[in-house]
Image (tube, rainbow, N blue to C red; front, side):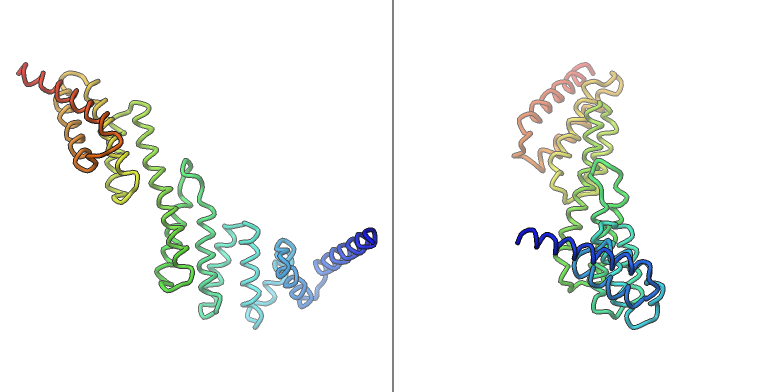
Length: 266
């Protein structure tokens, strides 16, 4: 029985492959459409796509074109060819603005860019594009069933940008480029006022100012001590119960001691 079942599977598979190869070579557009749709419904998106590619130009302006273009776009998405998926979904939205599938197509077109967003350590061009595309979708379809998910994706992408900016500023601190670190943390705090990384950013901005001050040349030291103390005061006012509180207090005490020496000398 097992052997018979195996033989039947082989025959069916061979027959299916043979039918597919014939369809690829055929000039019968209707046959290609029918078989491609069957492959699409069966989740065989690569095969469906190859057939769709051949017939898309033939169906322009015909009643079946809307269904075809939706499936064609979806095959790219399912194949994880997200650049092409975005392009094709945007074409669909533009060509069929009254389609019942337009909302889904607009969302998946935007979500394609979400999938293209790289890890935060890399260049974030696609991340920025993804946020823009998703925001455009949210603005256009404020009552969409995909609204909650779209907002979640935007928050995830925005956090990636925050993490990128924070990591750059922290790296400057790590390599002892304290002036660049202070400036980067300043920009970070202004650009991302609601970030969950704000406490750490304010501490490491103070830490960079502290290190810059205590290692400073004499004629710049007094002002840098004052600047560092000002950063401490801002940080301490915002996060009096911070996890860095004890360390920050010791640093501030040292800064005030050094500043007192300048006052005594003058």
